[in-house]
Structures are given as structure tokens and as C-alpha cells.
Length: 417
Image (cartoon, rainbow, N blue to C red):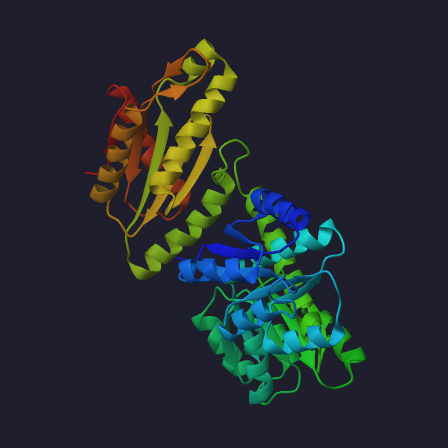
């Protein structure tokens, strides 16, 4: 797994700053060097683990950027960090394929360079669709995106693009030309926006024609941004990055709004909304769907004996354990010590076994609630695989089994026969 980055700078002060920023901000493991010789040793030793590099352009044993040139020949992603601006050198390096060219101007510049390494790592999971009828331009844009580690798909017109979007619904960005056969860029944007809001996908328009009116028309039809062709490579990257980060921020805010404030699990409303979709799919495809209602036994006693802060500790711990074991399914906290899990693809017997195994695991755990005290918790659960006409119907049925489990002595899982 490539989870390390090579950071090279001969300045003791600069390296100290980069080490501090890497410790607090970098999501990858840094390897530091102060010369080309040291860097090459690290590169040879960790080649299979190295993901990218942040490289000073002028080093004592590589004053003309020889290390950067070597790494680029190796097809190794490089962010250049330099104290002097040389326009010709910058242009040459950009043409050679450096990820970015950052001037050592301020602490923000160093933070920007570190964040660019994080950005490259995140980009590996982001799918981008390039829609352009010119094969040459389409390949050019794709090469730029590949250099920043995006997963790239291509289409020659709007109709092909819609097919790609059907096949890859997790595409997060579409970069589309305006003037294309079959379906032009405006029509494509309109078609996408009928299904997906700006919080779900970024669309960037392109055109080599007069951009004044076209940019307005693109954005009014639902595009997030517009670029005139030909464009500067660095402007392209800035627009792409800014739009992707805006999308991520919107989705993060949206995700937080769907979660319980204490446990970070989904809340009841989101569970019911998504559950309705899963139930409809289960009916349409005649596949299994099980719903489990889980309730901590005697949770009120924890609050009464140790206080509500201790109760929160128990809930948070339980939620983390529940998510660790069942997080691949739809998991939510409803209220108090009550949680729900919706499991697609497994029958009632399988889900009962799964929940029962988790029940056994939880019963063995010690939870520190104060400096001197710990508690053990158990839970009861009701499970149904009977697909009702609504999620509320399944919740009611599972709730009946939960009540039976409580009446039977607690620490019991009950479900459909």
C-alpha cells in the first residue's frame, strides 16, 4: 500500500516547519531528506510504499532541480517547493507534469503544499467524466486529471456521457464541452440537473468559442463553473480542486445533518428515509431485508447511579462497537438507549445470529464511566424479516419482538420464527 510521501528540503528551518505541519495536517507518513543523495536512498528503500513527493527545487547536490527531473522520469508525482520563481523553469516543469509549483512565500504556502499531498490521496477515490468530442483535447484533459490521481472516464458527446453516468453513478464531477454532436453541453447539463443537485455532482463547462455569454448560459443551466479553451494548466487545476473541495464541504455538512449529535450514528429521520428506499428495492427485486431494534437493558439505572455524563459515555462506546461490527449496514440511534439496524441481503436467521454474536461480545466489555467505576451493559433486540408495506410497519413488528425479549428476562434476541 502506498501511504508514504517523500519530503526533501536542505533548510533546517524549512524542514522544521514542514515536519510540524506534516505532524498535524498530513494524512500520509512522511519520510524526510535534506539532499538528493539522502532522497534517492529513501526512494530506493520505500519505492513500493511512496505515493508522492514534496521536493525543494535547489539542493546542495542538485542545484538545478536534478532530483525533480529524476523523479518525473520515474513517473513519480511531485509537488515542487522552491524559494525562487523562475518562469521558464516553472513552464518546463509544468510541461513535464509536476503536480504543482509552490513558491516559499509564507506559512500558508507551506500549508498549501502539505494539503496538496492530502488532496492527491483523496483524489484516488474521486471519479471524473470528461465529455469532449475532440479526441485530442479529451485525452489532454484526461492526462491532466490522471496526474492528480483522479479516476477518469471519457465520452465523446452528451449521449455517451449519460450512458457513462448510468454505469458509474458515483461519478462526482463532469467536465463537458459545449459544441458536440448528438447532445451538446447545455443539454447534458440540463439532463444531469433533472436528477442530481449541485450538492451531489460538480459540472464544469468548457468552450473554445466566445466565453462571455456561454459561461452565463452554462451556469444558469446548472453548471458550477466554466473554463475557456485553451486554458492554463494551473488555472485548470485550481478550478478543479476548488470545486471538488466545495462539493466535499457541502456533503460533509449534509452528512452531519443526518447524524445523531452524540454518537455520530445516523438519526431516526435519515434511517426511515433511507430505509424506505431499501424496502422498495427489496420488494422490487424480491431480496431479503431484515430490521433489528436494539435497546440497552436497564440503561436508566446507569444515568441514575452514575449521572448523565456516564450515560453518554456508555452510549458513545456502544455506538462505536455497533458501528465497528455492523457499520456496513444502515445503523442509527433512535433515542435514549435504542438503536436500529437495517440489513439488506440476509435472512432473519442470519441476522439473529449476527446480532446475538454482538450481544455476547458487548456483555464481556468493561466501560469506564468514572475514574473509579466501570459498568457492563447488555441489550435486548427484536428482529423481523417480514417486509411490510412501510418501514414503520417493520419497526412496529421488530418492536413487538423487543418487548417480548424484555418480558422474557432481557439480554435476549427474538425474531420471526
